[in-house]
Length: 292
Image 1 (tube, rainbow, N blue to C red):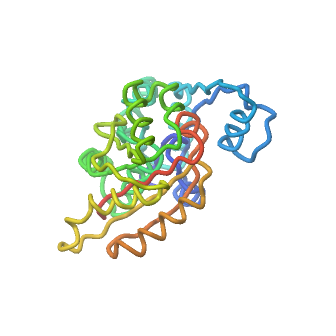
Image 2 (cartoon, helix red, strand yellow):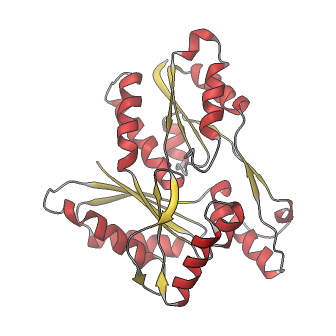
């Protein structure tokens, strides 16, 4: 039996090999969008494009995991591990953290003190970097309480940048306000590609205003700007890339990073999950980075 197991939601776009190698328990998140059923496409993003072609203006609705969902994953993890570390989607956009806490409170009393819950204040590739940091700390042999404390200190140092083809999906889901959505539309009309970032767990505009035709270039330039101070220190950065059925853009971004940032390592490229994908939309491109 292992020492510490990890529980997280499918909103963390972890590659399957990492999930299997570390026996991570994945909590499902529900996407309710009946209009997508039966449409052609290999993933949600392709079905969304088909929906638009047909003039259907419906939007998907997501439901946070229930306490029961977390409870089942806790119990499953305890079959393999002595203690459990749960890393949730940002509490600023979902009630997952509250569900995880409630699930802990209704676990059998002998297990409650063996569960620690950390709010990632992130999603997708950003949530992944928090999970990977947790794996590093577990493998170093540290105790659960110390790991949870280090992760909470680490979370503010995870940086996420994302670009969206159309802000309508985010606006409809309530992830951004109508004002920010209109600001993004106005910038796009001027040829400026708006980049969003997580700040204290909420999506807000990032600093740079970049003129570009595609999404890879602005993301790279934002990353380059934010990491230029690390050049002299020689510190390494870990980068994760996720996309909304935009493999070409993701691979272009990866190539730009590997060629242009000598102290960086792109650890994986993965498609965004259905639940995060519904409010972000097709062709979304995102990256997360942190110092290693």
